[in-house]
Amino acid sequence: MTTAYLNNEFIPLEEARISPMDRGFLFGDGIYEVIPSHGGRFVGLKLHLARLQRGLDEIQLELPVSYDELTTLMKTLVERNGSGSLGIYIQVTRGVSMTRNHVYPSDVTPTLFIYTFDIGKPNEGDPDTARLWRVVTGRDLRWQRCQIKSTSLLGNVMHMMEGVDAGAEEILLFDEHDNLTEASVSNAFVVSGNTIATPALDQHKLAGVTRDMALSILSDHGDFNVEVRPVSRTEVGAADELWLSSSTKELAPIVSIDGKPVGTGAAGSVWCRAQRLMAAHRFDDY
Image 1 (cartoon, rainbow, N blue to C red):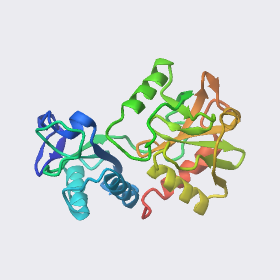
Image 2: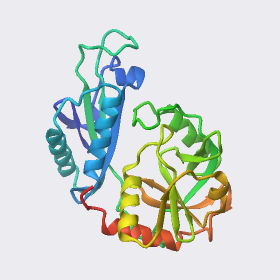
Image 3: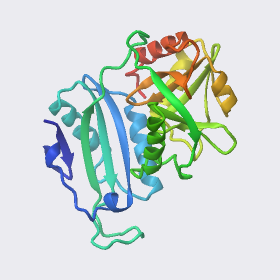
Image 4: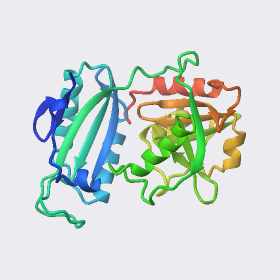
C-alpha cells in the first residue's frame, strides 16, 4: 500500500480524494514536479525545487507550505514507502473554487498532493542492462509555453500516443524549421564522435533537471565536447548516438529512429562513459 499526502494528511493513495471543483481538475491549473530518490537520497533536489518555484511564479500560485516543510514531507513519504528507488510526485493546484471561471480566484487555498512511485534502480553505465528506446519523429504541435511544468499535459500525451501508435516508446519532436525541440516526456541529446549536443532552451522546451545535471557533469568531469545549440533533423538522422534524458531515466540510449537503427543499434560507447559519470556524480549537490 502506498502512502500519499493530500492537504495536511497522510493517507493511503487509494483513499486520496479531491473536489471536482478543484481548478487542477477543471482547468489543469497547477504545477507539478518529479524528484527521484534512491535509498532515501534525493537527486538534483535544489534544481527540482527551483524549477517548481519558477513554475509557480509563472502562474502566480503560492506553495501552501515552506520548502523546509515540503522537504520533510518528501522524506517522510520516502520512509513510509520503503526508501527504495522512488520518484516523488508533487502537484500544486490553485485549489477549489465553487465558481467555474477562467480568472484566477483570490479566495482559495492551493491543493498540495504528493505521492511516490517505483522507478527502479538506475543504470550505472552497463550496456547489457540498459533499457533501449525506439523513437519516431514528428512535428511539435504543443503550446508555446512548454518551459512551464504545467499539469495540463494533453499535448504531451497526444504526442506520446503518436509514438506508441507507430510502434515506438517515444517521439522526437521538431519545430517549423525542422530543428529538434525535445521528446514528449524527455529532453534529447545527439552524439557525433566525441561531441554531445542538446538544443538550447526556449519556450518549446522544459528545462530538464537531468539535462542540466548532464551538461554540468559531462563538461566538468568528462573529456567530451559538450554543446548547447540548434540541432537539425539532418544532424539527428546522421548521429552516432541519440539519448533521452529525464529524472526517471537519467541518460537513456535510443537504438532506432523511424524504424532505422541508430549507430550499431545498441547502447553506444559514449553513452556508457557518460552514464558512468552520471552515476558517479548522481548525488552531488545540484
